[in-house]
Length: 244
Image (cartoon, rainbow, N blue to C red; front, side):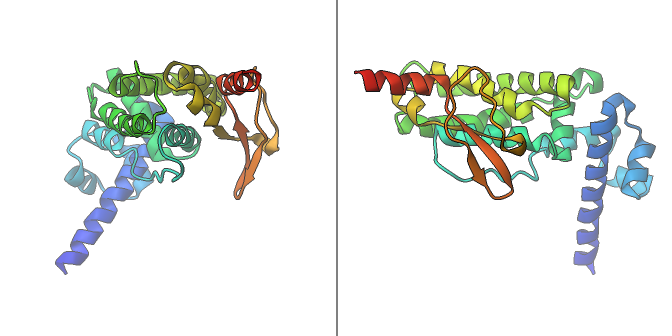
């Protein structure tokens, strides 16, 4: 019986958390009312306050648990994995409500007064770990500091997604993250690594968009057409090798 009550409590908390994520995503912190969250969750105020002591506590939980539904693609390690992971995040922000609400609340902390930086440190640690793998693989330039660049990457991704949210509702986010990488990679990757890396993003109807760079052949995978873009720096490296 105790196990049943425990399972029910976990389920109720999850239902409230996801209902709150939907309301925060739609209305922001200030516009999200407890009554709206209760109605969306189909539960009582007593149940909500049993699990979350306040609206601020509920928002903090959404921020800290934003990555709960993520399943990062498994592929080649190092910089390619870092590219694939950030492109995956860009696509997830278009459809994953918990992630999107958590990111929204993390960015708009002045509105809620949360002052919660742990989630940013989480992403810094995730990216730094893959950068250390890239270092072991000989993919990084000697002057690159893995921890420092991980912070730059988190800041760059955050700013890019904010601009994309405002301008297109995240519709162009994969495209903008790909563009971000075309410039950042030149600052951290060796010429050999640049020649091997590919930025893969979802493409509308399989159409290609050059965006000022030469492109590799598009690839198609189950679930939809994708585009494989080589960075301009990678093409320059290949051309230099051919002419040498």
